Image (cartoon, rainbow, N blue to C red; front, side):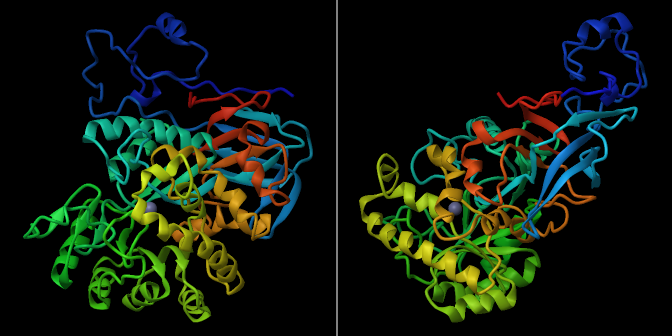
Length: 479
Ligand SMILES: [Zn+2]
């Protein structure tokens, strides 16, 4: 296997067509990469040099053809054998039956990918990217802003290395992280973020000291935002919108890790939830374990339920299917927290709660699927649990078939993000977020959890970040 054509990009192209360095120096700068950021500028600097340009922004992603590859059509659960998939400028531009082993076109790299499988990149819609390993238990934004941001760069690379080309953060991240990966300042997945969680006083997101009175009123932290009553809820939601959130997350029932709220406590009144949903007119999703918490949230106009492990009646699930309310169970985090070493993360008094939610998780994911609820892949792995992000595949595979789980981790997640047709599919016009595999994930979805064996290459936004495929060169290394 070899490539027949190559694209050469100007090393200074992100700064315009200025002769900042001589041709000889440009030649010396070529260290095997097609592009490198300009780390120095020769004096005198041309007057027309655009000082507003961000020097780390890369030239447009190149053009390449993956030839002879088996395309995984996740929507129909079928393989389209021996196809040529052309990608350019970060998008999929065409998919057609392969005729040759190579495409001979100027300006296009041609990769002979015969025998490999092409899957859409994975989507995890329940992550906490700022909860980096080594932080204190129970905290999503554990340290100073600077330390959090620096450690999060490690987390983001790890997620992309595991094949997650898109993640939704549901507590902790801000638009700055999203912009950093968009611009490739930090290699990482595409990020959808909702800023801090909104919680009622005493709810799952209230981490104030239970013995300190009086409460200090509306508290806007980086991790959670405590609000009570319609007016405070409106203010919190509007402030989060102002910060550039893609969605809003609230807590409508108790949680496992929080000390003072029983799992079956209902959090926020329906008018409070309704106020938030009405004012933002965007996706509002609720941390919620129970049927009653889910019903309150749905009545208030919520678009998604996170966890939902104790929803034990068909009526609530049918209502979710009917109203298009998404469900994101998170089996792996509960399994991990139930046993050493991770059980040290939660207080002993919370361990009883875990037994309930583990059993419930498997039941609800199966029944909700049978009743037609849109179920997405979510993990909630935080701190040192993050490397287990792929194990959710193994757990779901004990109750659901592989093709169903692959949908959950691709197209269903795209629905949650409002990105149907753009993410989670291999279609013309979709983002070129792709995984090249040595086996068919429709037959066994747990291959994703053996990435060194089965994941040969990872492409995000048309840029290769990992590859052991002949001729497919890594543009942005992750390690
Ligand atoms: Zn969470």
